[in-house]
Length: 379
Image 1 (tube, rainbow, N blue to C red):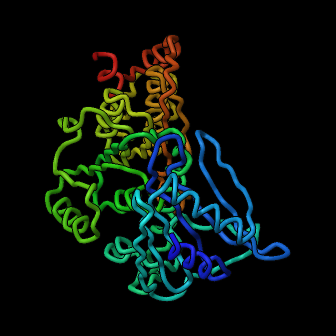
Image 2: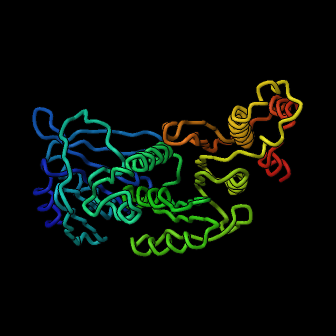
Image 3: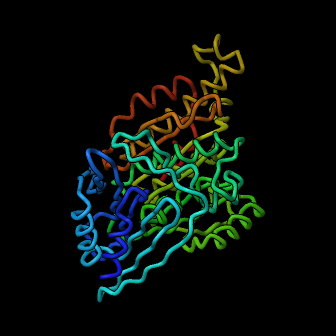
């Protein structure tokens, strides 16, 4: 560990962007610990650690943080990554305490802000080259966000914020299985994988599913190019997909019309702990509106379309609550970017809601009975 101690002595300074301690040796410890420098009457280091559903912060002086990291690598973790302003060091320590240190040059310079109350940072830092963002046309080779892709970059980071919020709900003692239905070009699929496995150090297995063969083949090639060995893309229909026995998290972004319902039904069937769904094209209930007291309003097509979309997602949320989920409907991104901006976030709590009278009364009064209701109640 002498070489690691020497490396820490050199890198624990103002040029450090962040240190990441990951790849745990044993259960009962956090998946990852993050160290960041800040300046407050001298150089200090803040440690961020997730335990259960809480985040803990502690501050250390240089000598203290150096010993803290060495102790963790000796006992609880195998890996340390030090992201400097111009390079990155990766350290792997085996059971016998032997270390392997690699240095990788950084294109450009990371901006280091030592203010204790820093401005909110993106989860995927702007200015830091990320291979999948370059390949998908969001970044240049130097790591700069392309002007026309600024909204896409913010959208990706916003979605990762929703992922970050539910991390305490995911298991930390085994591999996490994730399915992304209707992955399309897979901006978010790659982002989720990169965030959870590369940045956070989680042991995950992820599958992206889409109908388009060319898109799937392209995404699979990119996954191989990036070395994302636990990310697989498959061609197929959501309704007929049956390629998993247990899934921890289901993601579905803009699965059209009833495809969202089939994705939600799969998630419930698998007992997924977390569901993140951004629906779109909610046509099914729009076609069912008949004889309603709202007819004077529904005769205006655009109002009928919007009300049908809102009611569709409200009923989906209610059905998930009946299945034991705690559900929130959140704004995904600004309305100016797309009107399809609502996200259904559901976390399984095993709190089955027995009262279904109000749901049935609403549906019967407006003659609305959707696919998700049929799928869940007929199983």
